[in-house]
Amino acid sequence: MSRPDRNTWLADPVQPAARYRYLVEIEGASPESDEARVARAQIPRHGWAADILRRQDARGFWVHRKTLYRPKYVATNWRLLALADLGLTVHHPRVRRGVQLMLEDYGGSDGPFTRRGGEPHFCFVGNTARMMILFGLGDDRRVRASLDWLADRQLDDGGWDCFGRPNGTLDCWEALAAYAAIGRRRWTRKWKRAVERGAEFYLERRLLREGRGRYPPWERLHSPNHYYYDILVGLETIIRLGYGDDPRTKPARDLLKRKIRPDGTWTTEAAHPDLAPGANYSRDPGVRPFGLERLHAPSKWITLRAVAVLGDEARAR
Image 1 (tube, one colour):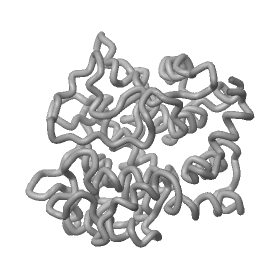
Image 2 (cartoon, rainbow, N blue to C red):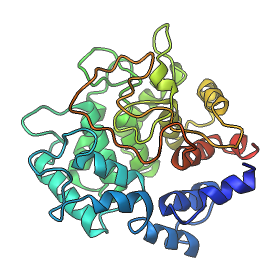
Image 3 (tube, one colour):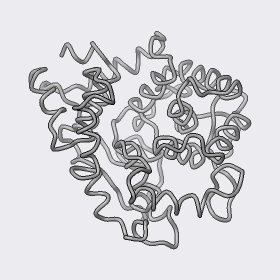
Image 4 (spheres, rainbow, N blue to C red):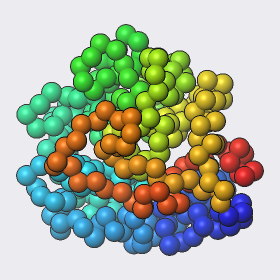
């Protein structure tokens, strides 16, 4: 696939979520341009987002109302995360109904987002804050309280950890992604300091190494990520935080470049939970995988993200 062919494929209106991001992030179109506005309006009507919305109960949830979190990865929480990444907002009535349920169950009053009957959890707080920001609720007091909570509980090494260990891990990327979503112009002093320390944590590890060994799932490409880490979501986050020019991103960029196919595309290499060789995630019989595209086939969404991350390095291919 030549560069013009790849561009045509990415910009195909059959997947308006991909077309919108292509126009804005690759072609540099204004989000308010006629082409971008038309593409954005089509996101809930055609393609991946429309498929997800068709499975939603009229009362706003997916699968069942009893819990919005399980079964992973097809319940309400996970479907809404995907819709947020695809570009929908609470202006769409079906999204608004789902968000209202999330806020009822997990919003509390003034504190961070918390699953019923439990304590706040780094991955859940970060993911839910990011989701709400992308949906257009960045000024909600619960979102801001969640961002404060993440900053207040950042570990001494600058990272976060979802399992109560004293050291951070690359796998707990959701806090930084939430700060990236809210945008640099809206950071408080506390958030800015958390970002500086968190970005350094990732850059010190070159976005892909922790300890002495490699961890293969971080090197494979996935979509959706749910709450798992890989080099692509790491690069996206670091770039959005303003650290894309740091030379320590080079190992991750080089690995991403090596994954490009002869036709100029990238594939979805694994679905989460990633149980392919080298993984140490546990097998959960209750998990129901959820993906946008076929495994091991050219992925429009991953290709779009990779081209946006690599810039001219990808456009020249």
